[in-house]
Image 1 (spheres, rainbow, N blue to C red):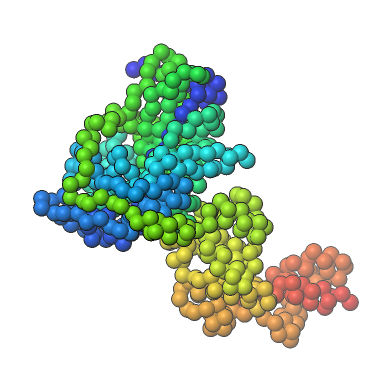
Image 2 (cartoon, rainbow, N blue to C red; image 1 turned 60 degrees about the horizontal axis):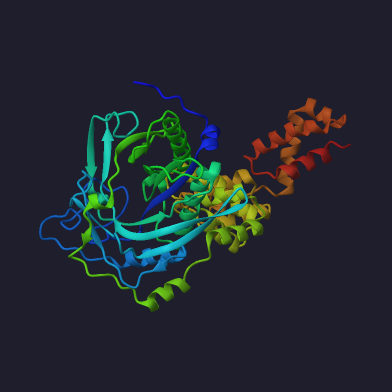
Length: 498
């Protein structure tokens, strides 16, 4: 086998112009599948959420899910698309193990939404990404490759198929070719998917969790010499993280440049991104539209959205995420990176509601992005399901602000809240965790610490006030951390000032 020397990214970009395109699949968060009544919950036992319709058994007939159609229209409107007044579903025919019917109910030449755009910010510059189409279809089953090191088909010894996902409503968002981005092509791809994810999340139509497959991205990449026709594209399938979208574009640019430099040609094919190495591997030759033998779905009536319905959905669109985040970032006094961390954690609304309940922006962020985010990560739950409400977090911060709790005690109180023991004040009282504010008790504890540490007390009397920290620690230990450390320090210095 001949090994091809790979150029650096800068060298590849110096000789070739990249053209990218992204096909993003979004699983909708409907209660039932697109054409039957099977549930759509994630994580069920394999092949337990299936029926004759989504398995394609003879004689079964589909019925369209109105909620799926509405969600697709809302996505199209949010992406500045035109909404079709009449369109049809089609059968996309191909055999693959995760296709129980051997065809996919999708849309072909009559998509529901067309000709939109998304503006993204890359290094302070706005890049407009055109949207070719947004169409509705059904998802396939899930294939699990086992026996290999990476979970990919390469190196696997066998494959298992779970049809629970087959039939879940899926929206495919296809961009127009994105040109003129040069060296920034990978960053533009990542910025676009990030913005798209935020828009869809704001609509409440999908949880867009890439790690669970509810948002998946196919990355198309081609290279051409400056001024020449566009090159042959490859399609890197099912990229499942924002970072990997960027890496997949970068990797394909380098790989294709190496082939072209050596006089080779690019094969139109699907490829698979390798998380461990950051490169792509060949999948299968890419079919064309004629290979799929599209024809109108005979068992479903056409879709003709009522213009008044579409107008109402347009009027109900939420504030654009980019506008909302900029407004909140300014109100909360935080930077772009901090805001992005809040967005990625799914904490925007939780923090907003905590502030509305009386907490400061800093206090609300501290608990949701600190202790509660840590607990959510440890338990594998969503932040909203971690066990504390915005009102409870605001109450907890109020107890800290008023001196009834310090941060250490507040964490212990929060532990009780998450465990279901009640609101923060009730937990504080039941566990006896409030800050010791009785001056007599504090004075007694300070005197005991001074008597037990005469050498440290002597240093403080000699003017070495930094030594007071040791006595503060002793008092805090004696009071189980329930004393106010600042008040303890002041009292120590007062008692030893003479």
